[in-house]
Image (cartoon, rainbow, N blue to C red; front, side, top):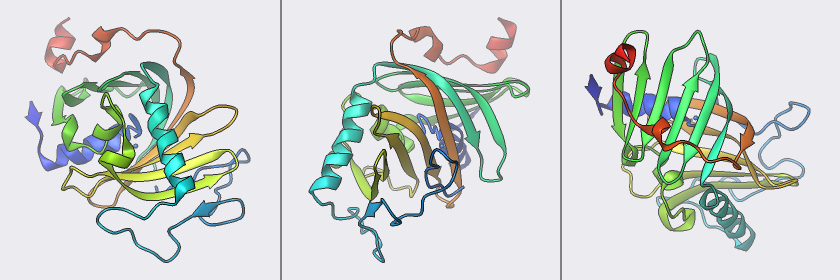
Length: 241
């Protein structure tokens, strides 16, 4: 078993991209025709024109503060969630699967065959497991960019450096970095605004600048998720069982 080395942190960010969560190729959200809207293009607002964010993030106007609060409220409103995901890695490989979330702190990604990868957060640790070769890498949740989204009280204005806010008629994009972290990893979150606020995808960028994208679909928040799904079991013990 291997624990919490720098490589594990990068793998956790890429795999969970999680997203998610997402939280996770440089991505702009795709519109309904599958095209990528350009930042600052028609129908978009942004305050990053020719400006790099400082250590405390970018300056936000009143509308952008409202949008960031909307993202915080969305995650605070999640108690249980399940759905499907498609993950695109930095080398453009695509993997599919199902995910489960139970806030605060717990998330599980089950990759579809032929992969036997499994990612589980029990609220304290994130385990990245490959059941074929019995690997079990672990990293503390607080070492990942997802801490601010998985905590009990999500307040992005308080706990995150806001690096980007964009808005279209039916989509908001917020890019953030945990204030409490020394690492340079960040998460870019895409939420639909209509017909209701709903997570669409997130992109994680690790310390090396590599992006992993995770698109979600068929989200269901109506049913309780069994807490037993978030118990971390070593691959060796799991195979015996």
